[in-house]
Length: 199
Image 1 (cartoon, rainbow, N blue to C red):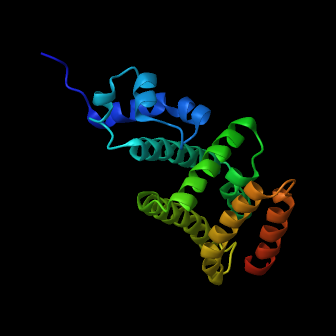
Image 2 (cartoon, rainbow, N blue to C red):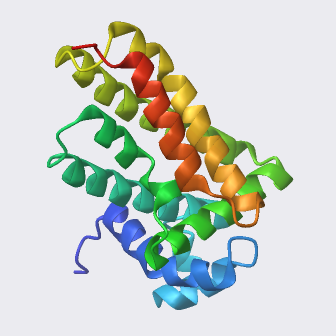
């Protein structure tokens, strides 16, 4: 009798095996055949775990977001101030390391597909991501209010910070020599002048 396969676990394993492939060929040029070959399975078998190419891409992005989330939660434990926690929230756009740039460029291509193909599935997925990151930032601000580091009104700036981060990301993608670090630091420092509790 064949061993029982955990479908979700196997789906995840297949997606992980395709991460380097998607970085090499890109989202647009990725084919289900290539993904199956990279995962060491038949093309027919891959359809037992994924509906189509987009489904494979979503799973890879899900895994990347989950990894980013876990890393974020781990790193935030040692950060004392709310302002530094907010800066950590902007790590994706500020980090110039080779590893992060690979992820950033992958997101850039993903975004170009969303914008040019008007893909409704991707838009729905982006909405879920937006909700997730908004909730994380709200938690940071609520902690700041509870610790008397931030004024209660500061919570009204959460959505604006999400929009600002998205704007920084787009500007970094579309402009040469864009100084994302200075702009981000100036904005957050000025914002905190307004929202920090005065001692």
